[in-house]
Amino acid sequence: MVFAGGRALGGGVVGGPRARVRGWLRTGVVRGGCQTGVMVETSARLLRLLSLLQVRRDWSGADLAERLGVTDRTVRRDVEKLRSLGYPVHAVTGTAGGYRLGAGAALPPLLLDDEEAVAVAIGLRTASTGAVVGIEETCVRALAKLEQVLPSRLRERVRALGASTVPLVGVGPTVDAGVLTAIATACRAQERLRFDYRDHGGESSVREVEPLRLVHTGRRWYLIGFDVVRVDWRTFRVDRMVPRVPTGPRFTPREPPAEDLAAYAARGLTVGAYGRRAVVLLRMPVAEAAERISATAGQLEAVDEGSCRLTAGAPSWEGLAMWVSMLGCEFEVVEPPELAVAAAAMAGRLARAAGPGAG
Image 1 (cartoon, helix red, strand yellow):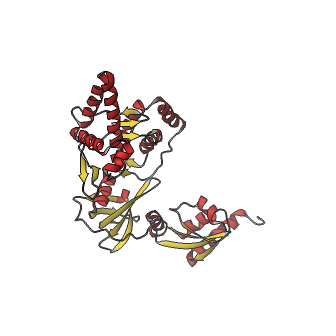
Image 2: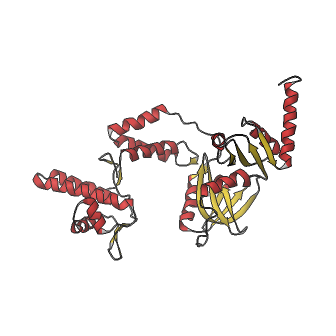
């Protein structure tokens, strides 16, 4: 059950906690007089209590009482009501004690404000046309349910976004939702992951890694993990992975290879993914270069106000020379000599193509 903009969004399972919540709320409404107001107030407070328990892991009774504007005794009574409805609210030991919402068999009510509800709708619409296969229909079903029960003011915003945008479905590799989930589960459980892997050259091998994090960019997903056979950190494309089950033994997490894992993955993708590495001096401010060169295409470093250093990898020197020349600025090859030779050959071909007297 989802609540947004003051309304309940979604339903419950007959006989489950959510169904009992709805039945209990209805009971409070049909009774007349002062008791109706008390029951409605109590039901609203229970929903607020559930919302708070979802925000952070542990709450002290005093903090909950202050947030709800009630006494500690009322908090204890409300917690017991939630437990009687099937929600696993656990007691937390410690000097002050407290409460924690555990995992249950059913989803608890989810309270969303207006902006959060719109964000969820946009996320579902985007995911339905993304690179993860196997979740498109699920996203569409969830979006239809959400739009159906949104308040009118939010429904119009979501529909306006949908009517005014056209997804540009990219052509490229897709990732199976089951594979992505299996990898994410191994990361969270800190279990070794064994999988068949096909590198950029088409060679297949069996890898065993201690998975750390998934990185997403564009239509591609990558896994950063410690390869226990090669004894080094590696970055793997998820669409080239076929996990083997079951997962391996649990491991003690190692010190990450970098504080900024996204930047670390980008460096590996720009250089490590290719057998050729080059450094080029661009006669262009680093801010301007960053607008033309994505983080996955090359690493930029400012030299002075008017120039920057580009480090990039490529499958061929000719292709790299052509790409750099298309950036629209003067440049100088720092290393290696092979790139300078390729650039000179390309310049000669272009000069001959322009004909005598051109320029």
